Image (cartoon, rainbow, N blue to C red; front, top):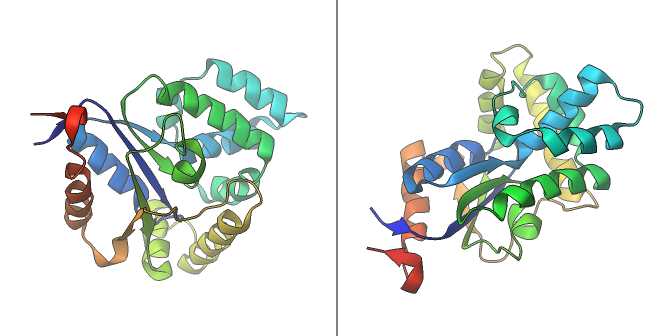
Length: 218
């Protein structure tokens, strides 16, 4: 298998588009540190919902100074309550700054990393460091809704999940701060038309083309 000294991958996409699964698969194959930015925003929402701080910005700033990514990644953050809350919270410029600063501290310490979210190629990895390859994930609304519905263990109706996902995607694409976009040159992955194995094969095909010069170890 191709081995890299440096490899920075950006994965962006809509809610329940399969980007998290794809990012996990490619990170495991190429031994990359995986950062899921969506979990960071969901963690913010969980903190606010549970603790109800009077001033949530200072509260989040203080919390993110001491918390580790591993601790956040182990939390249960995919409830419908958090999903509905985070769609509005993610529009907040100050919240985005807190999350971005937290991410950048981790990113700058690693040469081999995969970051997934909604503004990774357009904002987080747009420069210093810039991604080596960007992927953009899409999925049909029906398949995306069913995936999230099963993820929620059918605790809410499929119709409600589909409505929530549609609302989140609209908010992500049309928000003022760091909207969800497909950057020029990003490789489109339509997960409703591919199996997990096919998604990984397609991503690997493009990643392996990067084996040029000093970036490649034989």
